[in-house]
Length: 357
Image (tube, rainbow, N blue to C red; front, top):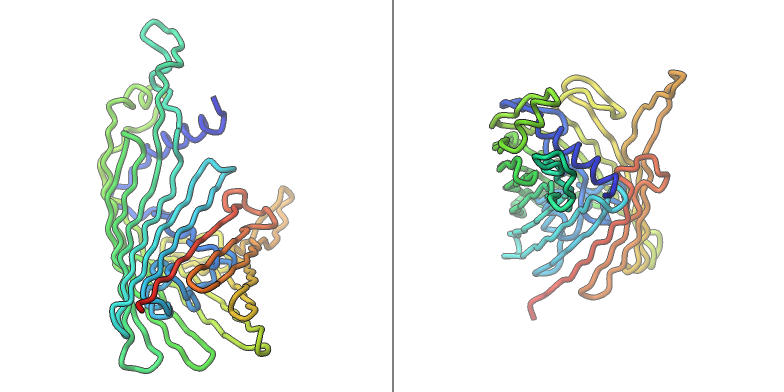
């Protein structure tokens, strides 16, 4: 039996012991903070002010107005923890009129085929490998987006309605709902954006099935979880992007974003209670709007070694992209310095655009 999967099974059981009881735990629904799309991930998640494809439904719904095609489809796949965790995305955007746009995003982050060893030993004390079952721990998000151009030149606004589904085998499950709101202002070569995620807070209603776990929890001294409500507090993202032309073939873009969380002190560059601020920046160079080279820096933190000395660490990312007619392909290599094993991944995103004749 794969050792890492046994460890993940233990982690999942530990997760079930957390009672949220209508509290707002730090890192709630954190799978929605990873980011989607190889373009954005290659730019260190600095994308809220410049996203120009179907992933705008996640990053900034008001920028669905940036998509030139009538219909665009997108898909992403990434793997984390040496391929144990799978991270997938499917999206679609539709131009309803010259001023109205809609989008749909489906996101899944999950670990599959985790061994359930609760029945490994039978009533006679024998080890029975044939009684081992498997289950999945997975988080799903269904995001419905709407964007509209305002009557003010350069100003667009948008919103998301999110449905959250989280499952841990047959042991626990939750349904959640939340709202996002965003706005973007374009002025000459500049774009300024504001994104408010979980602006009304997102509520997850957890339901636990603990019949199989009572004996194990009693033996290990863990508290049996109860049905409860988990709250995800708002997160505010401000971004500014600048586009420039180098010559008639080459152009560039630079962006800086600031993520402000409201769930208490976090290990980020600017940390305080209850608001912490995490800056990240990225760049993109293109050749004839066909080939793109990208880079970015994120996860800037203060780290202490065994001697108590403090140093600043960061996560560097790199990416490339191709746009040709209706097709687009992006690739990102995140955390090229291997400073965070959990975030290291090869990310691929595929796009296809359809226009009315």
